[in-house]
Length: 454
Image (cartoon, rainbow, N blue to C red; front, side, top):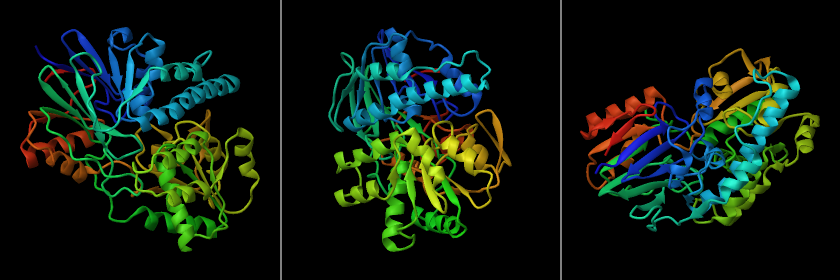
């Protein structure tokens, strides 16, 4: 009897990761992510899954980023009642990320209805904060490296993937098959996270390819960040930094703390972390010492280098601070959240700067800004871009193409097949080509909603 893998997301795109594994009348879902970016992708979030949620026996999350976990509240709302297996740190992050996602969706829908710029009447969130809180009750944790049974007769094991707190690769054993899901792999030289663990032997590998066609520069984030912030501070401007609340926000805070300690940036330069989710996430690093590179003193420096603005009133008050400043605010691709208000306020002034950190998915405002567009649409209005736009090439938390290849080369033996997923089409196909030509393995890029036998 064959084991089937159905690619319900993360195929042909870098978002929406969902892999349905079926065997002998049972099924489970590896990752449960939201589609982001282009509208035609985001519309998939409102399409019913081709499997009834109550027929899914369990969900296993490789990590907490919303493109891997953000569909979970909707799945639970629509009838899924099984267990959701994560690492402890992923559970801690999901408790921050998922309710915040629901809250932001409610806020955005309310704002759209109040301003009248939505094509829907009324605009409705995919799910609410209450839906997200209900879905958290389903989570069960397993530490890295310990085998467990998500379903009777199925064995799973998490191993460290770097990338963000709690991120894991996942080995699933069922029907005599060993299927390895890479999850999102971090960089061996990441400033925050430990390097990914070497992969275990597997018959089939499902490997991400976010940077499958690119190499990271040799320059580190300190060397890129320092001159950019020095430049905007010298002209009295504001640097608006869209950050991913989990991972990149902390990497930037750590870098700014280092630059201030070394004298590369003045201690007096005001820095704001304007994201409740990022503030809560920053506090988790001290609770998970050993799962990242920072010691207790470095965690404290990261937490104290910025003014933490938790409330909406505190966020609005930032605008009353004149002179140079740095505002770190979510979301990292400028798809929603408080950063949109800061961008709308600061994009029109040439003294200011937008500092993009990490991958910008096509179709997002971040990608629009990165492309050099003279205008960007925010809250139904076209905003003229006069601010300097800088994209940090060294700030990504993803392994680049050669680092992905090195991880695959570390497999103890050649797998029968590699599915290349979680990448834009060009990136996925470039990695597929390298796997076939350099390793001589059978690799393919599955299409959305396709099903394959292992």
